[in-house]
Image (cartoon, rainbow, N blue to C red; front, side, top):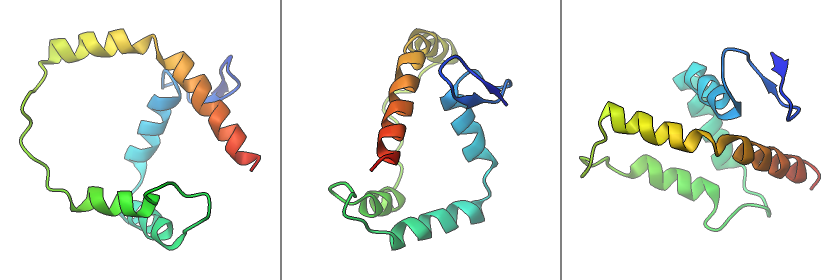
Length: 105
């Protein structure tokens, strides 16, 4: 891991914080994810959102995926990804700042 200019640890194989997060989520076993979900359900705090996060998770688990009305071609998907890529540094800084602020609560 190396430190980027924004003072976050990012594996050199990944371009930014979000790529690192996606990689780490992909590496988690289904058992670990189930355990995390279970722990989240058990943990209700006064700081939770409305509706509570656990209810949002439950809703998403119960939703049946539908056939998409629109599917992007590989080319169009790459074009959109390239266009959005420029926003990542600012979003990453904001996410880190929000995380740090929440750690102070």
